[in-house]
Length: 137
Ligand SMILES: [Zn+2]
Image (cartoon, rainbow, N blue to C red; front, side, top):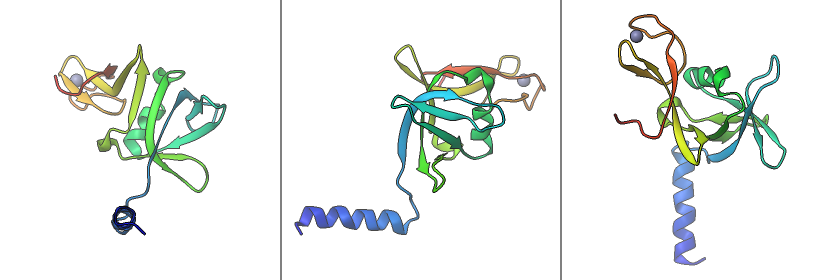
């Protein structure tokens, strides 16, 4: 074994020891069928169901994203779903007009940004979907 390969496999061992699963990034159209979780329809014809934490699941339930080209990073479950990384890792994007956009929600009244759909915690109005190129503004 060469020194470089040894270093690489040592790295992998450390990653496993730290509990980091290998992640993959998939890109496809967000689709859903009645009563089923949202899924990504990949270019090769495969459909991969998506799951995630509570806030990510909230985004996946947002019908405003249906049919959009999305990118998700996570790990494959034994059942063949993609478990998306936690919401703070920013692992879910929309691709639109050759741009990679963060999925955010915005309350114009309070100027409050959130990362899952629902009512603004301040004024209780429904937040608006706001796809953004950058998170600083
Ligand atoms: Zn508000």
